[in-house]
Image (cartoon, rainbow, N blue to C red; front, side, top):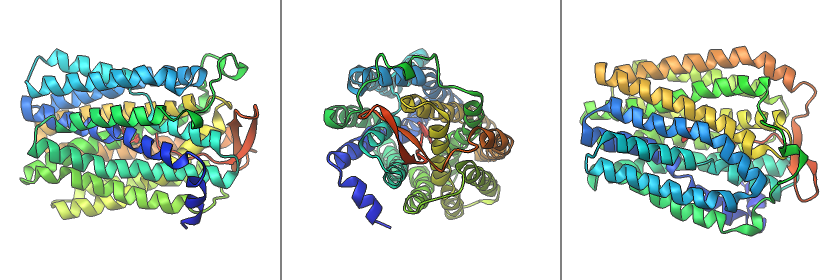
Length: 430
């Protein structure tokens, strides 16, 4: 199981940019819960916290694809260097305003700046892998490795953010995100040897968008999955607070990420021959069924058990979903294509955070978990409706697909590319 991972990480520069990317994308798991913890503590409103978090991800949803297109055209360092500085400044505005209980409009200003400039670190790292590797097995393993690291981020980030927010300063999670974005972003962008060459002037980046009907139906199902992630963050914080154990919120969220990471690691260690649309459909249905169990929990250990089970459906589903992106978008546009599904996750997270925050203020954590279950059912149904379109769009496509090789100017065979844009992502499961 470990040998495929050792082989790809032994490539020159691979481990260095992968670890830098790990640190740089820590904010995707800390900004959301950081906003919830800081704003709810200083302003006494989960609804306000959910709205501010929603502004971050909605702005990222609007600005992420154009920003990624600029990256494809002009290179990672040239575009994302100034963007990283702006992200850190925006997080500083959020943290400072929340700490001082300043004007609410300033919270929204910081949220807009963060969302507009955060980009998709996961897409940047995966683009480096597809530039570095050439064989189907290597690319499949590398993308699965990154999905596992995504889950490490979601295991560690919420725990650290919660500890800092409950024991040091309420804005501790936001300060952690600012530090990780600045240091990790600088370490990643400074590694120019593994940066994919820019595609400025190339014909395959000249079109207005990579969006097609088939990509749109995939995007729709990712929105439902993102809503699960956003609503879960808010509901878990409220649930643990009701039981007088708010400091355990990050631990409980980390348990879900643990299950996802373990499943993703095992998934990436084997080669798959079946169509990715089928694996994606199975994963989304399993996720929808799993979150239905939230209605049965009444204790923190029971919640942790459900979170572990639900988590095991996340990473394999995201890996298959991002593999579908690579089958659907033109070569040379992978960063932009991956950002679209990451954007969909971000939109879902914003909707889930807002809806859960509103219902938690009205009826407690049970209202938040109701949003999670509705989101799960919606995601499963949307995916089932989308499968015929995805099947037709990828008909005849091999399970190993063409991935751009900018070094040679032509595609090379590479396994179904896997991700995670929760984006997660859970973006910022995104």
